[in-house]
Length: 584
Image 1 (cartoon, rainbow, N blue to C red):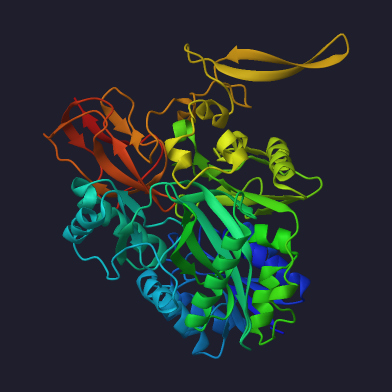
Image 2 (image 1 turned 135 degrees about the horizontal axis):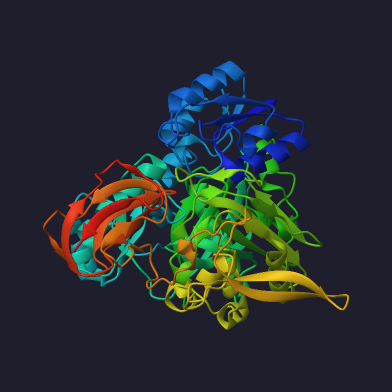
């Protein structure tokens, strides 16, 4: 068995890996940026080493710093987690070339499957059909336009070396191609360290179904079951479950067999996920994620297998002691991602900040995998996943009700989270009936009232905020609603949170105040200025692009007029409330 594992990651996944390592008696090494000096994964590790820098590029994507820490710590293995270097062939080779075990597939498998273009070709050679698309890297927007004219709009631009919806843009028509490609390339470079993108057909109402595989170095490759990840916003998952609802056993078996074919075609070893789009009884290969998935706990809950443990054992050379017929799936599991996002009006804007309160749920069948505790800060420079809430029950309906109960027991203050949106998703008839799709959250659900919930209180037309106060009347405990100016714990009035203001659009756009003075409601980095002084703009037109938590957000004009001032330039760091432009 391995002796000491360095986790080349942060947050929830680093904590998750450390816990299994500790149970197996394996020492753990954490790495951290300047901003993560006191992070939870650092506090839990046996050893911790500074990477330096604040941004991902300066720290968690700094290969030389990580390699130096491997040398200093004496780690004999590296677990990459997900994101960052988890699907980077060069990083995996840099690890293995030093005689250190990479806890994941061979670099050759990452090279084939980590590149989404070559993975499509490999799947085709294995006899598994993919979504129609170009099997070449995009160099110019004209290539996107040509593809859209051939296959019809909309089309999807996707990061060739990414996943999880990062670096993915849906293009509705030729006029959007250039800006969408530019944005996708920026996000891909920022999150994965590679800017290459490709284009494929965008299905009209698909479900996102993925198959968990496990393969050892002794020729055993198994599929463990599927996960339905169709509840998404901006192509990033919000709710995942296993097994998929309304999913025929014949299709499940065929998809599992296809996942094994794809895995064997690239010589895959360790845990991996083969993703498919499912529509009208047919499924299409989408991509293979050559790493542990964020949603792996739902598979763990229904199979009883610790996937991180098996990652470690396989990396140490052990053979799987069970076969395909031995895999058992029992009951139903649901996971929700708790992201630091303000779901106001369905916009899901990044919400960095310090968590002042974090009360966890408990009870039968409830699990919380978190990377933060009360007092920890969720930074604008990293992914916004605070943690994952997972439940298990004997059937889907009881699992759904258990999740709603667990959400009610969860309290997180200091940042807005996706918990109120998760409640709406889980309570929808479409979700209850299992008829939702990947486009359903953004195109069908109504998040009009989520802003008030996310802000911690309802707001009326006079700008007063509802505060629920507990009182006793004749010895009976009651809750009384009061309408007040927003008052903090220090007794001082404070301005109403921007999260409490209704939003108008179901995308990542951010609008100004309406006065013509355009400010940003969150901290981040300006990556593009789209207008010039003297330019006439319409209400809603994009003025600057703000990157926060690895997501790009369009900051738009609240009114029509002429741009009289631009106060930022690309690369500038801004804080919430900073003025970026003036429109008169």
